[in-house]
Amino acid sequence: MRFKLIIVILFSVPLMVMAQVKKSKADNLYFGYQYEKAIAAYKGEMDKSPLTNHQLLNLADSYFNTGSFNNAAELYLEVNKNDTIISVHRFNKMLQSLSKNSEKDKVKTFLRSKTDLLSPELLENAEFNYSLLELPIENNNSLIKNIGLNSPQGDFSPAFFKNGLLFSSSRIQKAKKVYEPSGESYLDIYFGTLNANGDLTEVAPFDKIPESQFHQSTPYFSDKLATFFYVLSNTEDGELAYNENGKNALSIGTLTNSGQFRFLLKDLSTSFYYPFFDDKTERLYFAANFDDSYGGTDLYYVYTNNGQIMSAPTNLGPRINSPGNEIAPYIFNGSLYFSSDIFYGLGGMDVYKSNMIVNDSYTIPVNLGNGINSSSDDFGFIIKEGQNKALSGYFSSNRKGGKGGDDIFSVTMQEVPGLKTFALRGKVVNLTNKVGLEGTQIKLLNNRGEVIRETFSTAGGDFRVEVPWQSQLTIQASKDGYSIFSTAYSEEVMEKIQIIPYNIGLVKMEDLLAEQEGKNVLKLNKFYFDKGKVEVNTQIAAELDKIVDAVLRFPQLKLRIETYTDSRGSNSYNKKLSQDRSNAIKNYLLKNGLSSGAIMETIGYGEEMIQNNCTNGAYCLDFLHKQNERTLIVVD
View (tube, one colour):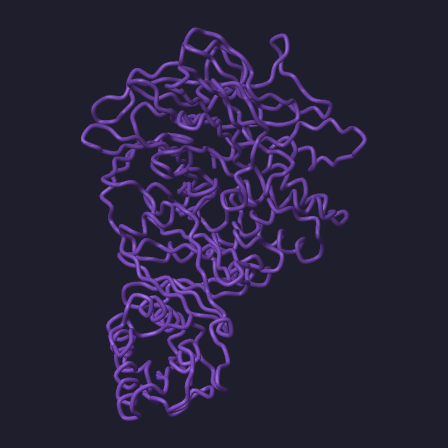
C-alpha cells in the first residue's frame, strides 16, 4: 500500500488547525495519517459511546487506506443508508471497496438504483468499461518489465527528457528531511539515462533544478518552450508556508533552460499536481482539488502564451473526471491518457485512454486492461514513438514483484494501447422546420446486422453514442410518425464522420402527404410529360427522386401510381398513353432504389376523370387542358 503514502504526500488532507473543533484521540490519529492506530482508537471509543457519522466515515477511510475493504464497505454502506453526508469521493470509495471484494454485481445493482441521482456520463462510462473488461483478453504482445535502479522507496511519475527519464522519488537523502506522513524523504526529482534495453542507468538527483528541503516532483519538459514544469511545496523564506487553516499546498513552477524560475500556479489553499504542457495547443494540463471537483482530484487545463497563463482553469468535465481521483494527464497522437481510481477499474489507480474529438469533447475513457493495469495501483503512463515507429512507454505501479514501493515499469508495444472506439455525436432535426427532435432512437448495428448500442436524443435533439471499433457500422434513427434513417459506413468513412458533428434529418409523415381528389398523395410539384411522349424527362426525374427519398425514409409506404391525360385525342389512345406513362414512372423508381413491393399498382385512367368542362369536343385553352393532365402517387 505504499502508493497510498505517495497519495498522502500529493493529495494530503489539510493539516488543520481548527482549534474550535474538538477532536478525539482517534480523530487526531486519522488526520495525522496514522490509520492503523486510528482504527484501534476508534474501536476503543466505540466501546464507550457511539461514533458520529463523520467519525464512522473516518474509520471507513482508515480501513480503506489499510486494505480492509470488507470493513470499509460495511461502514460506507451504513452511513450512506442512514445519512446524506457521504461525499461523492467517499461514494467512489464505497463502490471501490465493494469491487475489491469481488461484489461487482452489487455495484451494478446499486448504480441502477441511483440512475436518477448519478450523472449520465458516469453511468455510461461504467457500463462501457464493465462490458469491455468482460471481453476475452487479446494478446497484444506488449512486454512489461521493472526497470533497473528502482529503489525500496517510491519511484514514480516518469517523463521523457533527452536520452533518459526524469522521475520523482522519495529516496532518503541527506539534503532532505523525512516527511512524517510517509516516513520517507521529501520527494525529489531524479534523472536516469535510458540504455538500449529501455532500462535506467546512472540514476542521480537532477541537478538542473535547484535543491530544496521540501517536495519537488512530477516533472515535465516542454521541447517547444525549453522549460521544465514541476510541482513543489509552497515556501516562504526557506520554510513551508501555510494558509489560515494550517494547510501547506503544492504549487506548479517552471524553470527555463537558462535557469529562470517562476511560480505558475500557486495558491496556499489549493494543491496542483502532475503538470503536462501540450506543445501543439499551448495548453497546460494539471490535476487539482478545486471546489468544482466532480469528486477527489480532477483534471484541468489553462491556455498559455509562451508559458504565461492566459485563462482561468477549465475542468475537463464529467466524461473525464469522476467521483474518484484523476491524475497524470498525458497527450499522445490525439488521445488523452490519465489515471483514475474510479470504482469500475481493475484495482486502485488504473490508466485510461480517451480520444479528443470535436468541440473539446472526449470519448468514453477506456481502461487499458490487464498488463499496464493490474489489481494494484497503476498510474503516470507516458508513451512515445521511436525508430521504425516502434512504441515504448513507462508507468508506475506498486504491483507485486517490485523492488519496494511504487516502481517504474517499461512497456514495449506493437500498437497504441487501449481499445479503439467509434464515437458519434450530433443532432436529430425535423427537416421541415429544422427543430431538434427529442426521443429519437439511434441504433448502431455491426456488419451482421446486430444492434450493439442504442440511445435516445435529448430535448434539443442532441445525441452521443460510442462503441468498440467495427469493420463496418450502420447508423439508424427512428421516431414514431417520422421517417427512418439508415446508412452503412466503411471503416474509412467512419474515421471521417466521427470528427465532425453528425446531423440526422427526419421527415414527419404528415409533412409529406396532402389530400387530393379525396386521396392521400405524396406532395410533389406538378410535372408534365412531353406531348405524346412516355419518357421520363429531367423535370419529372427531379420529382420522382423525391418519391424514392420518401420511400427510403418510410419503408412501410405502399404506393399506387395513377396517371391521367386531357381529352385531346381518342379515348383508347389516351388510355394507352397514360398506362405507358404510369409504367415508365414505375420503371424509373425501380431502377433508382425502390423495391417492387413498394408499388402496389400502376393505373392509366386516360381521360376518364376530367376535372373541369374540357371534355371531348369542348373548346378550352391549353392551361385548362393541362389541369386534367396529372399524375398522383397515392399512399395506401
